[in-house]
Length: 287
Image (cartoon, rainbow, N blue to C red; front, side, top):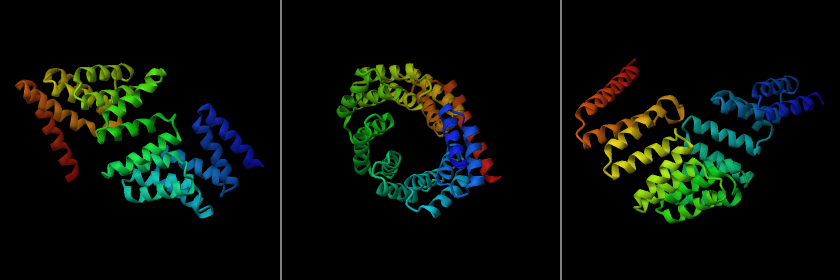
């Protein structure tokens, strides 16, 4: 009974957005009931969200020892494997979760994501299409479906899909970025530029949009404008851990753009920055 009361309090804390209080309450549950599956699972999810995959895996193992077919725990196991970069076993875990619970949206999303990353675009498209049918209100699923359609050259279909949230007043920065990508693929550069600008009005630090917009400007021969956009991308990559890997890409495009318009002074500066970064990374590897 005490565990039930504590679980209820933990749920109330979560509803308030107080994860620290919820964690403390869940740990109290485990101190009284070490095999409480719900508490173990929720704590493993907290660990994952906080980047502590090792601690999460310990709790997941305890859950699965008690209930081997616990789909949410198997899903979390897959997430931990993804965090380690082990895509093949992660894919296996997500597929197992879906076998147990065919409506597990998170597992389906990650299956599609991994298949696409592995180059299996046809299968990824099928998964994302099924996910959109299953969960039509999940914007991330719709966006992933559109990104995958673009890889298949289905730009017109993307425009049709993006029209709906725009008409409903539910469009996000990603919606307009996807429209921009589709229009760019169709060769409608001027319209694509307007969509990227609309995307950046909603999210000025959208690294995907900044990179796509900069690339479009390069295609249009507007290299000086492209430099400004890629510089913004480097600023985003420098402060947002999600986009750290974008820094080098953006810097390379700044160098390319400056070279294209013979901006030798700027080119020299950015090439020097790239060299310093390369030397610093080599130094870290050696030591």
